[in-house]
Length: 73
Image (cartoon, rainbow, N blue to C red; front, top):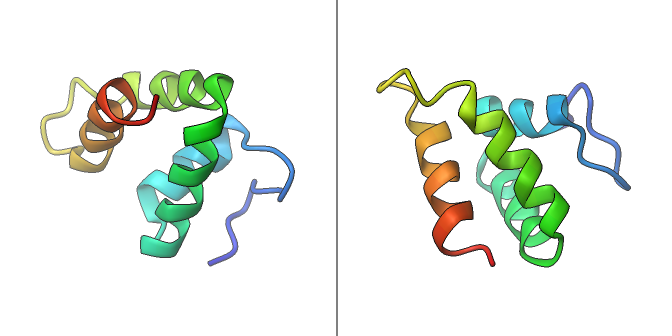
């Protein structure tokens, strides 16, 4: 799936938000793999998720927030 703000070399905040909100499994795997090796990307993911954590129905953001805090490092 091509995401509106995604460039192959960088993960912008908008690209991260787009992948979390509308991405499919392959998109999530790409984000997971990139986050595993880049600490600044994990910080960006947490920043994107923070805006949605007050909504208990935003399960994708809760998942990514938990994943980055516990498993990605």
